[in-house]
Length: 120
Image (tube, rainbow, N blue to C red; front, side, top):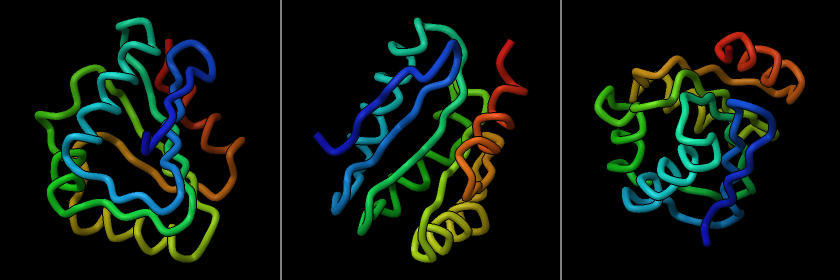
């Protein structure tokens, strides 16, 4: 598998993208299904973490950013731990302009605090 989905607490799922993978449309669709299942088929927020040297295809980035793809997701925090991740995250925010409220964090605690503001 290219990723792991974990329920961190009620309404918060973590999507960890494994190092060195190329994420395609099928992978993004699969993550979305796993997120919904982990969240008990209820609305959820997402903490995205990633290993080094990951790549998202143009089509996968566009799909993930689209309004049609959102469904039960309420917000997404991108946790970055390197300059490369920051560049990719900023590119995604500026070029793909995600419909889902998305923010970049370098501190996991701050990311989770922000995500909790969306969970009832």
